[in-house]
Image (cartoon, rainbow, N blue to C red):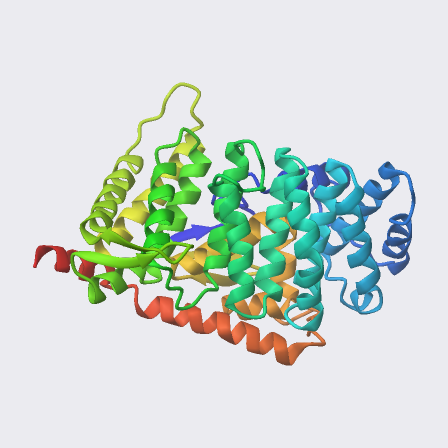
Length: 425
């Protein structure tokens, strides 16, 4: 079992912390207490200013306030104003302003929790975010937009259709097809890494996800190709995504229901055939790739810490693919253990740690939504708990996440053994 320190935000490597790092350089690494609501009020007023640099500084103040303290009462009074001003910043602002506004919207969604407000955030933001993806391919901007889309969908989606819509946007960035309007040029490694991590994060909420065999083959084949990429962070993100797909039982479904060829249909409804032996061959290829990456030797200029992260992660992948045992991790928050027992939980934890950065522990101690997601109960002494005004909807949403969590735990053991047994029979 891995023990993670609550201050270690690099347990899973990605580039999604760029904006957070910029913010920390302004406010310092210590927790900043915003006891005066007037400071955030003034910052929101500044979002109406014409000068872009003034709006950027205001967004930095708002980001820090929301990151280190849940601005619950404030949100009740200024929710609509803050959301729509941030959307205006995304539509008209500079690269930096778009990045800051995207992060603010994500923090706003986490603060309000599931319910009417979170649904409004997703509905109002999806079009401006999609348009912003098309307006340039600068890495830090696209990374911030991806993180925002992932968080607001995770909190605010009202059913699998809305989640799939966001996942499709992300997949077009991961693997652009001819005729796609999303990022005309080839995305950078940090963009692909963040898109894969965001896609995986949303996939954790898709209980019972059953893609067509053709889509399953396409996603697994492409993610497998990323394991051969030179970028270590991309390899790690792809390895996590593949482990999650297998954990959700997609391959097991095909083993139980098909032999030889699998009927499928493309987007135009044309019938196609997918050879089942090819799917089994993909599994074998991924096993070999995971084995190689778990033993990779360090090259010139290679970071020892990054190399060890990769080795450890792919040892976990290998153990899961061969024996069905997912990694178990424990980290302490305020003296209380937060545990993950599945790939789904670990991916959720890693993503939210990266997104919240130094504010993760504070949010875990005060956010009822995040506590329900992870089944975490903090020490109640001296804590100001936030109960969302949409607590009934909040509870229903997190019960759905917890159901997925329990189902994942229940089907892990022996999952791949079933698949191997089929091959050998």
